[in-house]
Structures are given as structure tokens and as C-alpha cells.
Length: 309
Image (cartoon, rainbow, N blue to C red; front, side):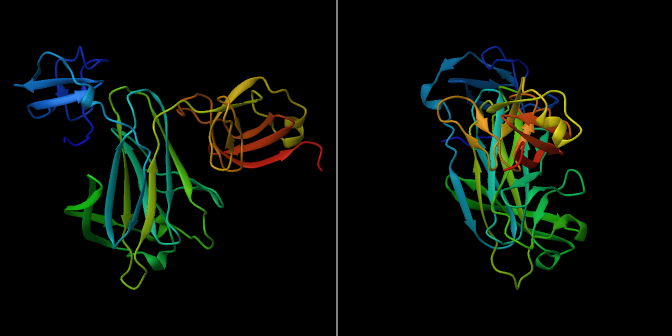
């Protein structure tokens, strides 16, 4: 069975593409061989894709499996097929009070922002770096080489080593358990169908073995609730406002409806202006269903009914 990997094509459809590449700039051809996507298998020979053949058994399946790791220090990369559609991808992570850093990668797109159930938004103050959950005393605060593990065929396989360079200002103090968290990343290409979670655990030797779980859901449109537009300056203003537009949410504590595409928003949910999760809602107060929410950095930081108890 072939491995699921990220590749790029020079067409919006695999059936009409003429070549497969390993980089988004389409400058490096993928090795010659057979590749499958969209229920089609094609051979690339001499850097040119050959005729299409139906291959129903080649269709990948999005599983949304939960993966648990109880291991040693190192870097762990878990990759999963999320589907061919465009939309938003939800990633759930947990550390059970051990010390780990997280980043999600899809082609050239990355995120390390986590919205946790108990503590809210967690993010590395240094852009484009992992968000570490734990206290500085739990991490090795220097550059070092660690074993690198890839998740292949339901087992972790060591694939050389990787350098982790941790700094004290990377680490987020976790004085109380965060309750697990959610990461989210839009998928706006029908061809970039593999998401990877890269977990770094550069922990000191005396600490307990790092443990974490990762779950990558299938791509889908975000659920929505009806809120106000534009934002309001205060909660009182929001309580006098009118709900007229769709606000899309990636739930953290919110509750999705089982009968339609709506969601009851909850504290620390991500909120967006579009169903793919590309544009976060601006900071401010919003009216919704007889109450209000306050948004900061794309996350609900306060939610309450209007008029008090």
C-alpha cells in the first residue's frame, strides 16, 4: 500500500494535470511512478503524467482517528488524509499535563495557535514556531538533536533525527490543566489533501515521559450562528443590536446541532467570517440569540446573556 503524502499538480483537476510536483511552486517534479487521487490512478513517466485509469480501491478514506503517544523526548509527525473537498480542518490535541509543543502543517500553510477548553487561546509569541504547553523547567532550553518519529501504517517509525531549538519565551506556563485544545486550519485547495501535526517534546530527563493525543478530522464547512455586523464597542451596545449575518465557528466549548449546520457558540470557540475559516472575525462585541459575545484574536473570550440573571 502506498503512503499518503503531499503533492502538487499544475491543474485544478488531477484528470487534466500534466505533471506532479513536490513543491507548491511547481518547480520540482515528483519521482516517476504511479499516483492516485480523486479515484484515478496515473503513471508519471519522464516527468509527464500518462493516461487516466479508474481505481476505486485507490480512494483514500478520511478516518478522523485518535492517536495516542506515550513515549520519550523527540519529534513526532502524524499525517492524515482529510478529503478532497475545500473547507476547514479541525485538529484536537491533548497533553495530559505533560510538556509538548504543537504545529499543524498543510503545504505552505501552518498554524500553532491552540484554543484550550479551560485556558482559552494559547500561542507562541514568536510567529511560525510551535506552541509549547508546559513550564520552562520541563523543557531543555537549548538547541539539541532528538529522535524523529513518523507515523506510518499504525506504528511510529524512527526516521533519523531532528533539531529542536527551544527558548524560554517559547514556553507557556500551564499552572492548571488546559483541558485539551483545538487547532484549525483552512483547506482551500482540492489537491492539498494531507495535514500533518508535528509534536515536539524536548523534555528534560527527570520529567515524566511525554504523552499526548492528536485527532485530525475530515475537511468540512464550519457550522454557524447568527450574529451582528459590524462589531459593537461594548456589551451593552451588543445587547441592543440585531443579529443579521452568519458567524462561523470552530467549536471548542460550543455545541453543534445534530439536525442542521448551526452551532451554539461557547467560550473560547474560534470565530470566522467565512465557512472555510480563512478570515477571523474582528475584535469587539457581537449580538447573538439574546446575548453577546466578545471576540479577541479570533477567539470568543466572553459570552453572556443580556439583561443579567
